[in-house]
Length: 270
Ligand code: ADP
Ligand code: MG
Image (cartoon, rainbow, N blue to C red; front, side, top):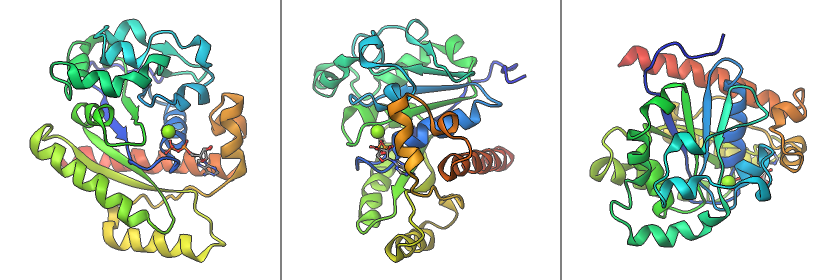
């Protein structure tokens, strides 16, 4: 059974990169779905665009209260969680009001700590899960900051294109700063190369540069560019359910196996 038997807190990981369109949401949804085969997973949609919610079949008009209610209104997490069509995968959807959160948070007490506090106040609801993923917006504003303060680690999806290395230095500096000032637990846990195009020399060149610099922080499994991956969200499905045999889905299955292997190694090392 995949039901968690211990009451230990879950592993909490933020999917972050200030660039949009690099595969944060796609990776969060599909890694979560692959892990849900054997684990209980919760995905928080923290992007006002709500792509993770849509991609898991929760249409905008059915979102009701979600991450805005948690972050800004301080409503309890347990009240706001919803099941998805994927067994063992729950979601906190992005409500339409989330678009205002970035600005409203500025005026609130403890503005960087709202998500961490919501988590501290919900140990029972969280103990049910093995993994909690934050799908962050494409910026390093207060929503992403809340995610980094509440997380144990960060996974950075990186599209293999010309400015990739420049982009990643910005997120790694932010992780360092948050670690020193706000959340000593925080680590860069891994970099996932996305939308790899093996026929494109630049893609290969950037991938080997990133591996040369970040070494084993980079997952061996790279996600190929695959049209089935880009079609899946319009059906409200993870690509794993939309077309399991597609190269994109199979890459996420492999990524999940590698992720679990790395998790076991990490636990052994602590
Ligand atoms: P982000 O969350 O970083 O903004 P997304 O995950 O939404 O990025 O991906 C951006 C766009 O690229 C989406 O339209 C998505 O469907 C598409 N996409 C993501 N990964 C792949 C892939 N491996 N192959 C093809 N299209 C992809
Ligand atoms: Mg996104």
